[in-house]
Image 1 (spheres, rainbow, N blue to C red):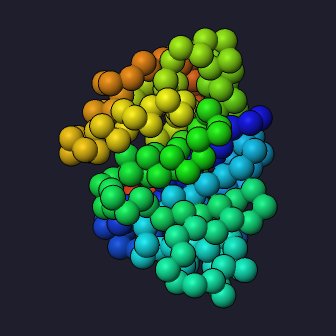
Image 2: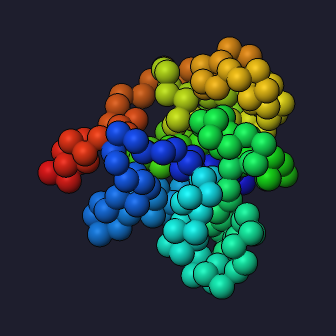
Length: 207
């Protein structure tokens, strides 16, 4: 499907104490697991991260990037790319990741957006939500309940995302109030929305 997987990996992971994207799970990192899942349904995957994690993220996915100049802000290899948060809006939360990802890939219309700490994401749900767009393209966002970090976004939200950033209205709820949202009602696998925020949650994940 001609849809981009957009992984938001620019958070500070303060409660965890270390970058959540690089936590080990089932012989690989969370970010590797999520990239693998998204590649099964998306034409390409973009990871948006902060400058502190950029080099480590590239070393993990893109070995050729190790010899690149440090001032560069993005690399790509095959179907996976890594990019830094837009300089104008750094340290402003998930809206920065949305803005950065969509503004760098405007030729695509649909984005499967997920946080970097959601190991049980549902590819079948993403495909179902994408089909909802095919059937009715008037919506800007399709999601389950109040789960904006496991949702499909249309590229036309870009102007509204920047409007929120300029207004310093930095919650995803602020964005959702400005756009047309469709809620998918029939989805019972709540585990898909599990995210890992604390060392205790991580220990439970490994059990």
